Length: 253
Image 1 (cartoon, rainbow, N blue to C red):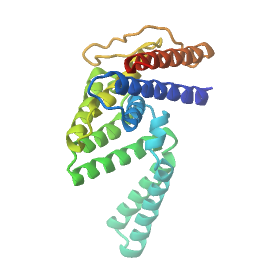
Image 2 (image 1 turned 45 degrees about the vertical axis):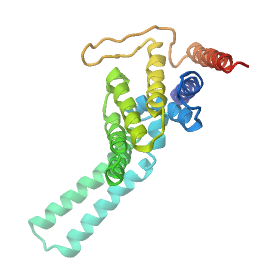
Image 3 (image 1 turned 180 degrees about the vertical axis):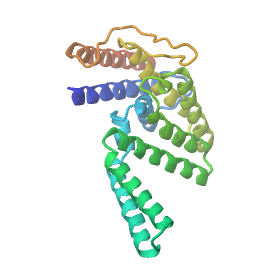
């Protein structure tokens, strides 16, 4: 059930984000209809759940998580070999062996979510460095978000108006750097669609955390239940039909 719930929730957020992208493309004056923009809205709708190591986007971005434990094991073996082959018996060699043992224990201890968090940290830091090399501030800020989000509590910092504004600002900077009009709207719209959807659950969302530690909610959904999943599907369908009708009406068909 938890695995099924995870994929249903991720799919619902993705669907709502994509529909939001279509709404922006078809209804906002001056914003060109853009398939990459709609895809960006879908990606942005998954971004708030980077604070959960089992979320769909966490698993996709943390693509190196399967190698993290091997990396720590290789570091342990390398340190042990260096201590044995290059150092004479004494304090330095003992310290090297202790470091090798520590790396080995870390590798053994990194299971599931812990490995994914570390993998996301590496992925984010790599993105930061790529941004610095290319002189794209937006790319470095994106990497910073990817690095830090997994180490926050679920539905805390990434589910606030501050994170939404930060994500939209990344889009604004990308727009200025790449000349791709509408990035901020696609990114911000997709992101806020996720938070609005989570507001419909019984847990709600702390929109202005930590200023006020209060969950705003319209408890229509009971997550992880059959009725909740059916309600999610109904909301996605209704939202999609509404947007489709508005876009068709605007185009005059």
